[in-house]
Length: 507
Image (tube, rainbow, N blue to C red; front, side, top):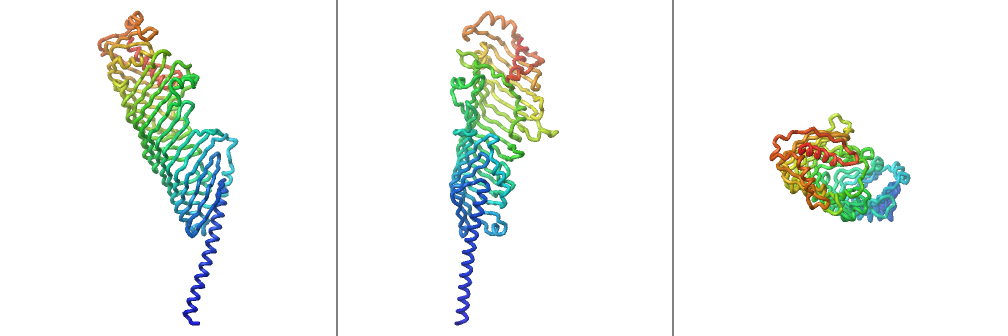
């Protein structure tokens, strides 16, 4: 046999042996990776129909996995791993892949009582040895539903079109956290959000998008479940009926984390644009005599840690209706063209010596005609709930005032308020301060019970006590104080300070 022939036969035999070795290695690795995937899925309490590994294509597929962890259920059509890094698995037993694709996940979360919580996943996570690194994760379609205990009706629902993550890391440490993985970049698009807020209201949004650290919410709404008359049938004490619509909410430097089982939300600038807020209260219902905390107290005791540097509210309209008499229309108070700037809305780091005060500046047209400026400041960390509120209002004719005074207080006013200035400070118990009110030819008419005919005698007596100067140019600041009724809101507190100042000025 010629030397060249022997050499060729040797090469063919070598190629054959190499092919057999690669086939054996491929079969061996496929079996081992499949076993590793199945074992690790079982360790995190997952069930599945099938695991398929094709190393020649560097792919692995999990068919119809179901995960159950601490009252959370995740069902998925398929999980597909692409571009598996074989060398990482051979040398370290780590699973590293270029892409992970998940299709149509259905996530169900049940808020189970404490004694029913599943702790098996925590125990099994201790045995989770490999590290998983995924360059890209893409989730196509899917839903998330949150249920109250064993209820068949979900309280929260969202349907998302796609979610993309970059550089996802899963290991023994992350599996013990509330969010069992770390990531670098995030893109999430949801086309519907629904939340059952309470017995009378629902919350929804048409679009919700997170692009790494930017958030956009469109058509955010709080929707009453019942008409105004129907709302009253569902409550036993006074409770406001809300109807809110916001065109868009934006956050441009959003981040979140979990610290000691508490969610922390941080954002440098938040924009709220095009809000329309209607509030209705029927005062014919019995009073709600429960304790009403101040805003600083509510923020201080939130279960979520907030750290919002700046919030701006644009193009907002607020309408408050209060029904005082069964046979009359409700009184109306309106704020239009409202712009608000809120600084340092935070309850994070309250032990700091230089913890910042929350400041709220509001500009609006009161009753659509009177320019109004208000500044509110409070310290969330202050347990006495100290605050300061100051502001001024321009010319207000009597006619728009009567939209509230006539149906609510059975009074008609004549004349006009030329200007008003106020400055109050206080705490959870008591407030005091100063107010100046300038008015022109101001008179009041007290109506009879029917709300239409004038009670001439009572009106005449009332006007005897009104300082009816043509122009009250020498109006001076008055000492005003009020002890808070803690079964009433902050706005009732503020209104009583304004009312006392007005009475001192007029009488």
